[in-house]
Image (cartoon, rainbow, N blue to C red; front, side, top):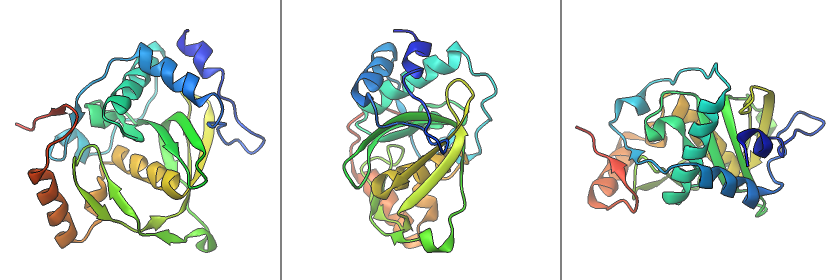
Length: 212
């Protein structure tokens, strides 16, 4: 199945939100089977600590990158993956994540921007958060339990994605990546130090790129 045929299965609703809950298994499998899994970059790698380049070419090369990202995400057993987590300096992330109602969301977003929430929507959830680029480490991090991201799909069309609970956390976490922030950058100095200690004492379950 071609990239275009797969992407055509994903539309938008009347409000311009990506319909990312339909045919999830088929779409994720198609991406993953076309892609090649790559090792994960970890904290300290320069590509993770700067804002990524804007996606300007919505072509087959971008499609191949997205396929590789889905393959890499599955290998690492993640729910979201930003391009710089496999060493690519571009603003694109993929996700395969459940929301708090147990609904599965699968998609890819280019050039994401988090929309500002109205004060009444900013209900903070202080659940644990982890990151494939900080393997084996977890820490509590308050984030809003609702998020809206606007950006573009793999063909360059304007889209929006919204999520609740765990999926909202995923959208915020992956958007952060593309602007050079890891979740540990939002922790207190003590909690960041503890997370890095957890990482140093743990063993990743997937291949990572060693920092020279």
